[in-house]
Image 1 (cartoon, rainbow, N blue to C red):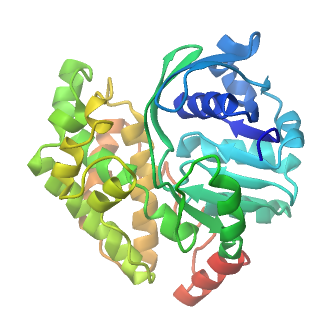
Image 2: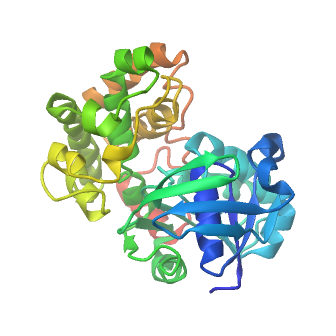
Image 3: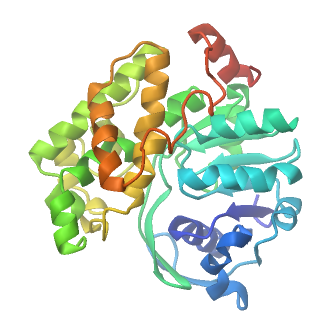
Length: 363
């Protein structure tokens, strides 16, 4: 697929890293940000160059196209990689839908059930496209300057879910050359329930809230902040996540094993996997509590999972406690800010109806 244009939608850390890495590997990239966030790509607008450092290529990557014109980006590409926080996925859907065609495949990286919200919005607009999401970001990376990105680690077993699930093999064939080692989930629900960030981040941040505020994040979050007690709280969240999956017919991988399979760390319990991880132990904590690790992972991760759990009769007291506790910490309602089964387009579906929709894409 090299030399075919791929649209990377977004202008943050991972979008820059993916755009640069794929460019250095010979792909033509159209990097597109929403007009309201043009400042995210403004530093490279004139010269279209991102300097990449790290383990997934190094050098000056001249991006084929840098734009805030969604029509232009979608006209150039069949494959759209949406690499934005979950709370921005809806805004990108609104911008993309007027220009979406059946030829498009949209991959949310990661999705955390965002593919379901996109599906509901496409249906309401009378549009069709193949939708997919992955269960974590493909790289451990950051923007290290306005026109630079550094990749410290590559996820070696990125999980993929596709809607409709009947398109899984085709989409995997398209995505695997870009992110080798793709593993497939049964469908987008299984993939969205396999996201690791909502399992780890809310409990970890809330249990380190005082230290984050006092130090402004000047400590190594995973190495110093995820102690054995914090790891036990995270595993309690994970037990509830897996119970939701079991109720829907999935055998979801425990988060400690998922960390190992993704290439983050050695096999073992969660504390061992994290403390043995070269990638994770290099990451510092958020600089404040106004962080995506709460503002994204609570309403769009835990809140969404609890909504699904309630519809299918699964108790999630730890997740609910974390959303309730995070609400005053964040300063807004963690329940109202996210998306539940209605926004996901699955409200009222019995388990069999849900399974049929996920397989065939028609609800």
